[in-house]
Image (cartoon, rainbow, N blue to C red; front, side, top):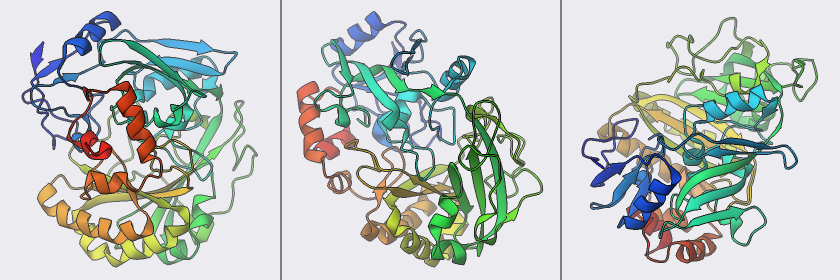
Length: 428
């Protein structure tokens, strides 16, 4: 047992309020800890920027980093089961060694598998769903220390992958896998924001995974284009060998770039069209390097893809306010899914991500203005990042929120896994 006083998230903007931080060494200890606790939340790798991972005063904050690693491939079902606390980079290395892959990865491979899934984290690509859509089953510890397994096809399963920690302590995640494949990454400069606003799909549909980086003030942006190929090294737009023409008049970069202008690209994944394994190209950053010491704040909003042009125009209108408090903004796309609390639930989505300077005082009013501009377009915030709308108001934007509330009441009737954010979602 240890006090959690002084324990912060990765960015340092949240100091956790729980009385205890515990790190069980095995499943039995974890079950006993959960059963004895008054309230419980799981810390993960601390890459959330709000209090989604925090618990109430008097509660127990759990780290799963001490649990034994787990990696079990089921070749017949094309799945892998991994320990919840493992990071995507760890899992990816093991899968690649077995000739396997995930369909998608986040831009940062350092985050935990369970934490990324629980908050609806995603990668990019018109045809790529968020990371939680790869979940085939979850194993978790319930409020009395009981073991529960929820698998795809079971009643209520679509409410389980993106769960905000409200259903229990996830100990293992079973993910869909596929044969390994190659990816080649290109960067383009000089992408006109006027052209982007006129035809967003021309950019986002140009590759397997696409990102647009801008500050919303300069008239031009930069484009990250990741092209998928087969497992033997062939790389093209969708498995072929030809590199497509640069979209919307963008210009191929003649050197590697970092997403943030002026920062050396030393720790970015390989660019300039050099093919490599999926896990060494889909993230923007190499797994052996954390791209920041946490000196940043983050927000993200997902909108219907049909609102992309209107959102680009709205953000450009705020560019003179956004740019001074911004490090970089990224536009990506996510395919629709059926997970009840996924920000991409039921709609092909466009995501606008903001990496702010680490000063909430100056960021807060700009963030509020961004939200006010995007909310009428159907914006849903990322559950693990900063937003100013009330949690209940955000929850009301989800058509299946009543079903999720019912599921949470069934699995955690006394609310042991709730905190202030979850109570807002559950309207309790």
